[in-house]
Image (cartoon, rainbow, N blue to C red):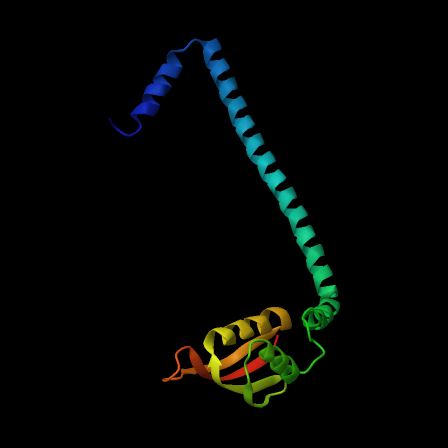
Length: 168
């Protein structure tokens, strides 16, 4: 088939149609073009209106968030510490009192920075130490910043530990 042969055939067929049929076909074609244009424009205007509404909502929310950032930061800073047990106690007090519950003895301890605590355990039961660290994190908001664990050669399950703790 040659390019354009379809259009040529359609043009010849259109010319062979009676005058009333040609008018009806032209009117119907014009109607479809107008309908398609209307649907395209109405869909885009609806999309635009929804986009503008969404933009206004986002801008309003953003302005509210920026206006309230200081009070929220103040609340989250104090609330996160107060949500844990022993929030008013010193880190050494919390560490030593909870260590006793797990039959762990703190051998050495010293401050580590402004709010941290470095301590050592010797001959500690590994499983009890893990339970103790879990309790410190979950109930007291104390995390391990650094830890070094060495197993004891002569006693299975026993370890020497050096670690740094810090509050959340």
